[in-house]
Length: 506
Image (cartoon, rainbow, N blue to C red):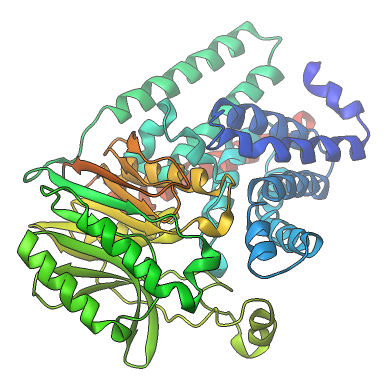
């Protein structure tokens, strides 16, 4: 049989095949957007795994796939380590390999569990559940790292229709399920009934996804909000140069003064003002007067010094009203804070002096904007659905993210991040306003569509409007609970099938 032909391959050859499949995995994500590759690559990996003689071999295949995926998919981290931590390329690449080595544990464990505890067709039921649950765990353990999760590949296509109901992990479950149905059809290729059943299952899954994506849980509230997003395009090497601060502040002030008269909200990117608010009281006072005179609200990325602590924050200026703040809560390890500081602090500060000194914010997670509420996130917080939901649970009618991807140069990092942001909009059915230093600055519709964006690495202002939306999606209300319940039911089914499977049919 075709399915058994791979058993004739020497195991090192299968291991190499899994590594290559993993290296191709990022092509399913932005900016390449070959979403169908996610299904094809999972189909191929699961085919390799289900022919493994022992669970540890299946785990090795999963590890090879994961290592290849993360080495190629997040290689942009080495740009920061080389350019700003002054590591040579070999050492920076080694750091990426260490991260990949950690992230690869999760797919390895998923395949080990599937082969160790499930038999026959039950493995095909358990595989997608365990694969996506491993991603769910990866996004939570040790602060979490949600990059390259399967569901994000389907952000703009039909399987993304499950996002408002089950979140991106539910979308990932459908994607992996699609792959295992194809694998089951291959295994049962001698049976016309099985082939017909497989085709029917794929059509039903696709039809349900399309129907699910057509349901609207949110509705317009209030008038459209006219926004101006400032993309300063300040190189990182200048941004944190104390001698350049006056020039940077002047640069952004000029962009603010040039915004259209009808703009109601003007947004500046993460740490656009690279100086504590306590050091520029006169400028802030002048901006408050300008805001009151022009009836515009300003949201500015700026570090906040308060109560002896420092925060990566967004400051809201609304006329002469007291300043309002959003403090970033989910910090980047080794960049904004240092885990085990007494042990690792000296090493980190050797390469990146002064980093790791921010404190964790503690809400609120919305800022009021002209009668509406902006659900705030800063930088990679927008990659975590649970962080975005905090603002939605406080009544956000649109999402607002400020970021700075200049750290990662001309890489795929910004495109990957924008794809994840679009999924957040689709999950919550809320528009998203994204302002970044070097791009991608964009407006995203409640259905995850990119409405308009600025080119990267240019100075510019993106003017547009967003329609705030009230209401909650099932995902916005219950988070991952529906996905976890569905996964539990499928695992119970797999366990039942395994118990009924006779040893002679393994």
